[in-house]
Length: 113
Length: 113
Image 1 (tube, rainbow over the protein chains, first blue to last red):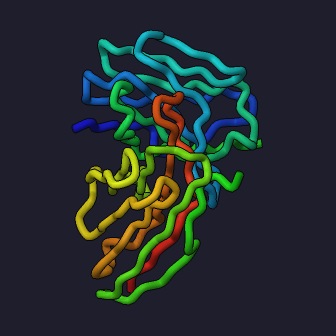
Image 2 (image 1 turned 180 degrees about the horizontal axis):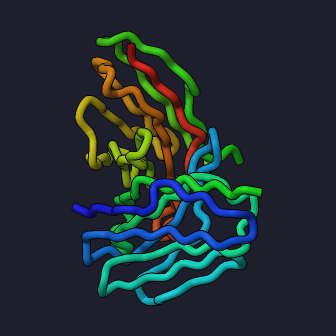
């Protein structure tokens, strides 16, 4: 089955700096790669996703890149703000089935004012 | 819309006791999921359902049971609670053929002593 690894497990950055979180997956049939943000005491919420037919997607300060050959994808947050502090999860699934979404272990991001 | 609602939010169980975590969604989503979240381990899929009457095992199904008699409800049953089941449990749902986004509840924190 699919296995998703994520690094680093914790990340501290100064406000205004960039943050990068990297994930790798094992199932070459995976086609859909979402990123979720979890704030303290809340359930995860989708912040951005990417499908296998594109290599990069941006939404304001957030971008995701995908390298299908190497089976890895990354989340980039620019101009970080204190409200970006949260746990971030990457995930992978086979888009065609949409049944299982397998998550990475998470990255705890702290943005220091 | 309330979205995905989980009850209870907190529960303490003794070893060997049984209980049911309730999950209901009002978005008419066909797909529903149960995940458990342990520190540093991310979200592990326990069971999922693609529609009323259909359920399937995820990554860590042992010690749990589910049923799906209606589109709205997807309860998770723990028959003989063990300390290893101490965790935060999240229910999620999504729309068939939609964007793939998972909508999570706010979680149920279970402690088994």
